[in-house]
Length: 102
Image 1: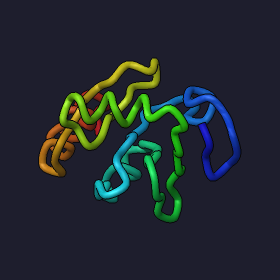
Image 2 (image 1 turned 60 degrees about the horizontal axis):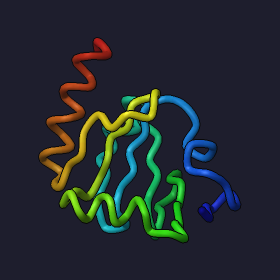
Image 3 (image 1 turned 180 degrees about the vertical axis):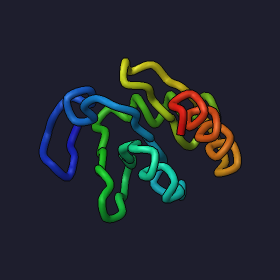
């Protein structure tokens, strides 16, 4: 895949920690970054976000098939939450903050 940092594999680009992979038009709240979650965006990225341009569209197709707009991914690369709305993301972030003791 192509990123704003060059061509690489997704797991190499995202690194460790919690990540939010989101569609180009999904608005990630500031709270995401306050929890230390790295934001990666499919399509067009905002300042401080990682842009992901998939050549195969595998991730975009996977998300579309599940009607989700964003994925909150754990450090072990397992999906913590697949959400369609900002409200669903806020609920997932509440659970994450509680789990992390924040």
